[in-house]
Length: 143
Image (cartoon, rainbow, N blue to C red; front, side, top):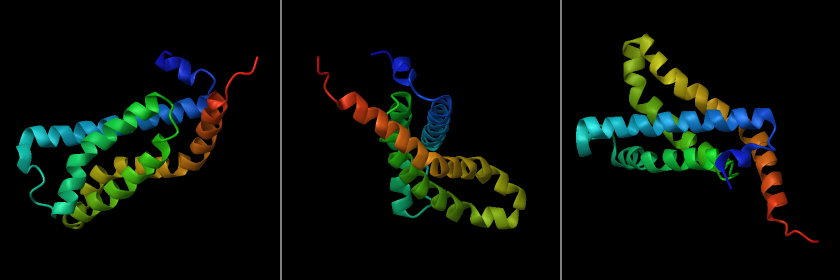
């Protein structure tokens, strides 16, 4: 089955939401890859070890979210919410001193915060549509 045929019967708003999910998580994965490539294995030495583990694994989790969004798979919703629920507080925590020192630094955190709000806000309605669609596809044909 071609990728775009999975999107064929979906409402336009669901297609748009999945596209935003894919683009947002692709940007997140790319950002983490860029930081790791530019600074090597010591890219996140300035943060506490649980956050280091989170940031390194976000390369995998964000990439998986992109894949699931492109496949219109319902698992993208809880995965996306979990990613943003872990990533946003960590980013705000480690960037708070910069925001206090230079309030314009909040502009760095604004796009990811808005994306996190979108992921959370679109989560329930998107989940309902994708769950219904997958349960419909799982039923055997009776001829």
